Image (cartoon, rainbow, N blue to C red; front, top):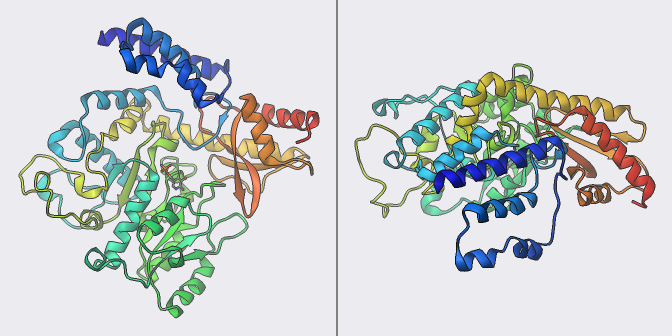
Amino acid sequence: MFTEDLKLVGKALENFYKESVNGDEPVLKQQQMCHIMRELEFDKYLGKGGLNGPDLEQFLEKYLRLNTRLHHPRYLGHQCAAPHYSAALGTFINAFTNNVTSIYEMGPASVSMEYYLINWMLRKIGWTPAPLCSDEMNKYGHGGGVLVNGGSLANLTALILARSKCAPETWTEGSPSELCILLPSESHYSISRAVGILGMGSKAIYALEVDSEGAVIPDRLPETYGRIIEDGKRPMALVANACSTPAGIYDPIDEIADFCEQHHLWLHIDGAHGASALLSDKFRYRLDGVGRADSLVWDAHKLLQAPSLCAALLVKDHRNLDGGLFVGENASYLFHEKEQPGFDFINRMLETTKSGLGEKLFFVLAAIGEEGMASFIDRQYDLTLAAYDYIQQQPDFACPVRPQSNILCFEYLDKEASQIEIRKELIAKGDFYLTTTIFKGKRYLRLVFMSPETTILVVKDLIDSIRTLCEKTEI
Ligand SMILES: *Cc1c(COP(=O)(O)O)cnc(C)c1O
């Protein structure tokens, strides 16, 4: 039964994939949820079971048709990878074996994979990889990391570590009221939410000034710092973006690091989206200085063709991670002295049980090789620049900023046009999937080039479609 069903799943997915890359089907079509529940006969299957064999085949046919197609050339939507099938297979294998990486004995191969990938990423940053033998693991001076379920969780964990370093008394006394944090105004909402979760309140946030592109202005940092000291506050960290979410702009890390070193300030880089440029000879310079940071978040499920979720939290000094999360004494079934041939990740994360996330990244890297991955990133970044050049040449369209990653903001200049309405119409038809964003106080259409199938022709079609749409309707 197992291999027969597996074959059915394989066939259905291959078909889904082919339809998607050929652009035969709409990139998305949203139906009413109650309709989907009826069509997929959830009640029937929960009642009598039997979702295998021919039933499974039929079910998948319907189910996949209701899916949004991330491999589609016209997928220009959110920052989720169009996963490589090898990565999906890795995820499936881990799901079936259910080996977890919290403690070594529950997943020796999965833990080794995660540990290996963390070291691979540490090397890309320029940090010292961790030793492989357990008697050397607590030696000083090497980096560390962990894979967690998403960049948001990784950012929260990083800020907890920064606070543990700056105010270790928090774990017994609660968060000191004078603690504060420096954030670019363009930073991801998961950071300000993390500040809230940490019990610091939005009053603890000092916004960093940004330039016309949305990048932090290093020369303005001393002024902000002066205000913090005047207010009697104690800064626990500065966050920089690599790159920002709305427009994909990188902050000048090297200059920011000068400032942080001078004031002994924890520098956290939110590279959830853009840290993958570290693999590219051509675009890596955007992250110059990253090795001087204390922590970095790097999502593999965005630009590394891995399925959601696979986010790395990496630190330059592993002691800040290994000692940064409080562990109570009542989990004696997990935490006890033991001799073992591997490593437990459990001390490094907020989750207790955590599936093997290394499989999501390892299997694609191993299939296409590091060089294959680097050319994919180059391709997507170059395509975004080409799209920018094309759109800038159109008299009735404009981009607010030259792209630095695979994210591109633009607007249709017709006075009557609402960018929100344009997107609404386009996704209702299912011809294109794109998003909108506010950048520097203004609403723009936003493209994120995730699919390896997208070419410049898609951008030309999109521009034509927007013109036609606005001529025909009153948008
Ligand atoms: C996507 C993103 C996040 C959130 O990551 P998830 O993996 O979606 O939780 C955080 N920061 C930046 C800059 C991002 O682009």
